Structure formats: C-alpha cells, structure tokens
Image (tube, rainbow over all chains, first blue to last red; front, top):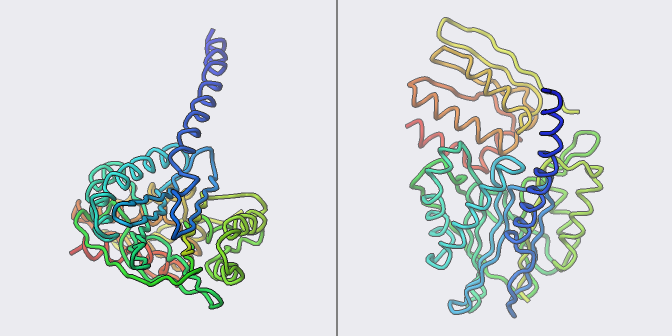
Length: 255
Length: 103
C-alpha cells in the first residue's frame, strides 16, 4: 500500500514539478528582457545562460525618454535555481519601481538596498548589482556598483580598461552610500558588463576563464555586435558545456 | 572534480581554528556552515591559506555567519587569505561590510 502510494505520488508530482518549472521558466523569459528598448543613441544587448532551468542572474534596461536617460543593470543573486530566481524577481521589481524616482545610479542603489535589506536579511541572502545610466544629452555614462565584478570599457582602436567602482553587495548594511563615477562615451565606444559565471567558468584542468581572457576577447572586438555570442561560445567551449553557474552579459554602445 | 577538505584544531578551551582547503562554493558551503555551527567556543578562526577558490555565495554565507557570531558576542574571523580570494572579497565589499558590522 505504502509502495503504491509512493508510486502514485511520484507519478503525480514529477510531471507537476516539470510543468511548474516550465511555467516559471516562461516567467523568467519575460522578466529577463531579451530586447533592449530602442534608442537612436545606443545599441544595447543582454543575454543570460542559466546553469539550471532558472537563474538568479538579472539584467535589464530602462529607457526614460522624457528624461533622456537610459539605465542598464546587471546583477547576481546568491544561489542558484528556484530560490535565486524568486529573489531575482524581487530585485527586478525594486529596480524597475525605483529607477524612475532616482536621479543617479548611486541614489538608485541606495534605495534598492534599503528596500530589500530586511527581506534579504531574513532570507540570509544578498545580491550584487551594477547600475549604469547613460545621459543621452551629455553622452556620459554614470555608474555605481553593489559588489559587482568590474565591467570593461572598450574605446575604438584602443585597449580596453576596467571601470573602477567600489561598493558593497546589497543586503548587508541598511544605510550605505554608494560611490559613483562618470565616463564620457565617444561614438562606437562600448561597455561590457558581466556576472561571475563568466570569469569562474572552468576547463578540464580546473582553470578559471578569468578576467584576463575576457579582456583579450573584448580587445578583439571593436564592435559589440557579436561580442556576447562570441564570449558565450568561448565560455561553453572552455568549460566543455559543463556550466557551473549562471552567466550573464550586457553591452551598451554609443552609436 | 575539485577537491574540498575541512578540519579543525582546538587551540584552547575557548578557541578553535577551522582549516578549509580547496574550493568553497554553493556546493561546499553547507559543510563549512555546519562545522562552524558545531563550535561552542567564543573565538573561531577560519584559516583560508589552502583555499584556492571562493564564489560569491560562499562569501555571502560566511559574512552572515560572522554577523550571527557578533550578535552572540562571539568572534568569528577569516585569516591567511590568498590574493585571488582577497580580490573577490574586496570586489564584493566584504572588508567594508565587516568593518561596519564589527565596529
């Protein structure tokens, strides 16, 4: 009888979980906006390669046409799979709600941190978040980082450089003032933002892909058009398609 | 497959050192947390000199544990960080967080 019951539960439960995962995966596809809002001044792309059905990685674009501001985000919520995905949804909601009420990346990060602090403390979780804001009238890119890996700035026919930004991950200190920096973007300059799933991809010798290889690949690309596709292929080949962590990439280029 | 090992050494009645070797990530962090939770001493050091890799999930849960110990008036710390481990921690703002939390 007990065996019969277990068999019945398995028969019922397994397809249900699969179905729920598939539904959640559809939600994820909507939440991770695959097409950036069009803007004549910029070409933006984003892509996530989840390690499981669901990912804790986040990227997003918010275009405030009336303010001539274009926001770009990349984040990495602690953990993997369903728990990380649900917290990513919390992060996205906070970012999208607060962006229109923020003047700068540092202000937005401070508000997102204050908003999520209590919940993340209870959940014993945290997230990194890079926040950039392109000012379309001034052609400036202002950015702040909440414990996120440093993005790469590639200027036309010049070696790339790392964007310096220091700040703590979200969820640890309730009132924290994030620093921000500003760079001027010339036509065709682009910025590559990524999560640690890229740098921490490993080959069969247990060697990480690392930041230096990312910089090498970026240096080989004067345009961001194929960059994400090429890095994705490099990472998957490097790790022999055995991905350990979610990997997310975002590029923003001045046209 | 990456290696991972953890063991502890009692220094005194009230002090323990936990040695963590190999890679500390989402797959191995629970073993570390369990080991830390077993301790009844007031002072515990996590010796990371043979830790070759730590990911953000590992770092985050270690920080949470340091905060828990602080709330219990106990002291949990990490020592002997390799450069790559220190760099990842620095990028996440770990030392700023700890300075704020512990002071």
